[in-house]
Amino acid sequence: MSEHISSHFNQELENVRSEVMRMGGLVEQQLQKVLGALESGDTEALTEAIDCDSAINALEVSIDDDCQTIIARRQPAAGDLRFVLAVIRVIVDLERIGDELKKTALLAHELFSHSRITPNQLYDTHRLAAMTAPMIRRALDAFARLDSAALIELNDTDRKLDTDYRNQSRMLATYMMEEPRNIGTFMDVMMMNKAIERVGDHAKNIAEHVVYLVRGIYVRHTPPEQVQADLQG
Image 1 (cartoon, rainbow, N blue to C red):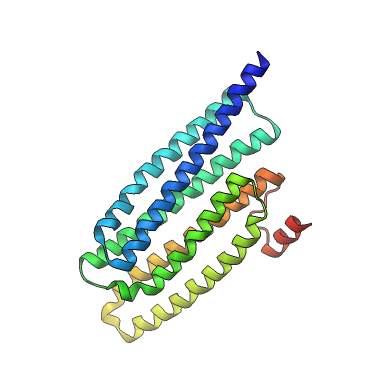
Image 2 (cartoon, rainbow, N blue to C red):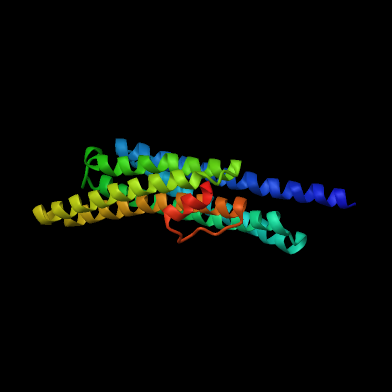
């Protein structure tokens, strides 16, 4: 009987893992639609990206319900409990990535629909968004492979993304002073860039949850240098 129960429990955990990866896949698809639309000005692709958010939200609710059921019925301990808690945190960050991409798509849709900007003028925004694609892929791969070392790489990438974001913000501020009649457009681009910068933050958060899952340590708010020393030590 205990082996039978254990088999079912393991299958429940594996199903949750698979659903997290499916949710991550939807987020990646949403990002690809946004990237393509920023490059081409395709408002239909932006609408599809906006619509993706409802499926991502539904998966978050479903996975969270499964995790709550596992906690209530199985009373997991040690590594199994860490896994369930990590999953709950990971899906929150995936859902928030979906929100930020939806926000980006809504703003871009508004700009393109009213001919307030061209894809060429969003080159730097597209470049920022493109930086987040490998970050999300790396974070999901770290979850699938239980690779805690991915956080070191993602910390480095996130710093580069943050630097580019700040540089773009300074440029947009300059444009606002030079072209005050277009302040509204520049503000929308700035909000898009901020949403994209937040996508990188959430990808890094996922890697932090993997560290908790694998090592049992909580590295949130820990300086990157200390995190690197802890993971390499």
